[in-house]
Amino acid sequence: MKPLVYKTLTGHKIKITDKGIFYDDVLIGKVDYPQDILTDKKQNRIVEDEGAIFLFLAFNGKPNSDRLVAFSISPKKATLVADAILSPIKDYDNDGNLEFGGRDLTEAYTTPDSMYYIPTKYYEIVNGTIKPDLPLTRKADIKINGIYLPPNKQLNRDGNCCRVISTPEKTKKHN
View 1 (cartoon, rainbow, N blue to C red):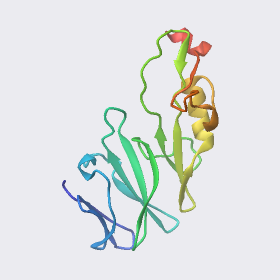
View 2: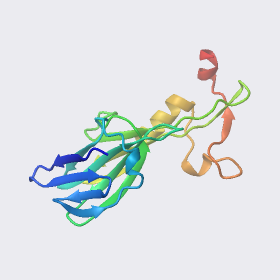
View 3: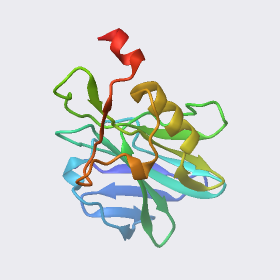
């Protein structure tokens, strides 16, 4: 793997190799499956917010969508704080905060009157933290699925993703 190297605003070096994540050449964390890092993606970068440093790495997600993982970086530790669908890191809802996320792939349901509810999940960077962006998630779910189901209602009876729902009227018009 070709190492990825980033400089913080204060001049510290964040380096990612197949051996792990380094802060000024000190190992601060491991990366599971470093061979799956998509080193050519522009989403690989650091974002600094309110003194916090976040490292974003794009991963091959085959057979599903590629992934974007976020680590909180300190001089002594890299902590995984989010795992989302690979997407641009930008202000999707014009609230002044950077967001990332989306929804994964699924197979089509077997009858045209129903569909799998495939939930979206967006995160936002706000006040030096990464947290779920519930308003953006809800808006995207309604746009894509026709309805919003809270996390405790998204799984089928067996506890697997995803629940089958009636195809919303607006979706039927486009089929």
